Image (tube, rainbow, N blue to C red; front, side, top):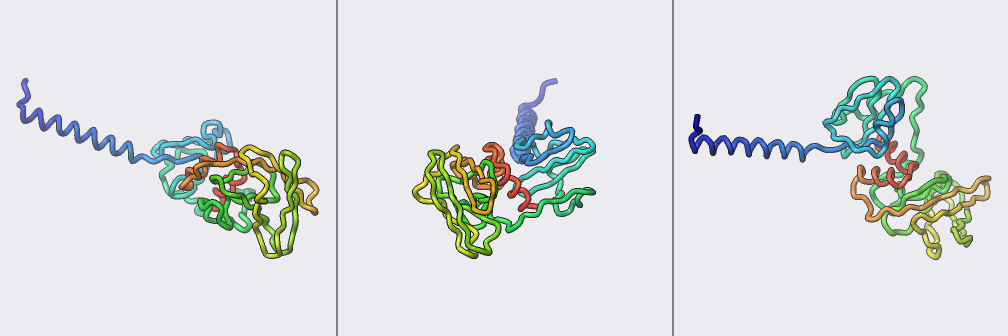
Amino acid sequence: MTMAKGELGRSLGRVAMAAALLAAAASATANVLVVRSSGPSAAAYPAGKSLPDNRRIALRQGDSVTVLDARGTRIFRGPGRFNPSAPAPIASIPAAPGEVRPRVAAVRAAPFVPGSDASIWQIDAAQSGTHCLAGDGAPSLWRADASAAAQATLEAPDGSRREIAWAAGEESALWPADLPAGDGADYELRQPDVAVPARIRLRRIAPPPSDIPAIAAALIEAGCQAQLDLLVDSLG
């Protein structure tokens, strides 16, 4: 049976429209980023894994997966199959028996503003580990207890040392202007009342990420775990 020319045109038009709608739907599918996982299925959902938000997350007993997207963070606990796009804010999920949720003391908000006060980009003077810096700006050193004046000694890879001073009431101190803060360089921060110095490896992220999911992905890739934890906890 031969299709009339007009009918053929309309049929092709419907096919083209359907294809366009499918393409639009596919492009509209957003992704979520896994930022934490534990339990038997952790290997299937490692931190840094990007998942389409229409993909089901299959979890077994003892599994816990935290995902992040533009809407914030959500925790899914097994057993069960879960839709990452379903609203499940951390605040609405009670802690499991015996679970202690971390508190963020003096939460450093506005994590996407490099160099601002109270930012995750500030270096925690009490914590060893890899620390990410946004862009090429000068780092600052943050302390949790600003009740009294304090001093510390910062030692560079070449052995040169600089003194750091916080006045009473100040949480942040600027990195010495004459001490390069190099990407991949290791430093030691010694404080008089702390037996073990903080060992800090710097990693620069350039250009700085412009949104929270991109920040989380960059922190995971660079191994800046403490900042990732602070970001995720503050969003919760």
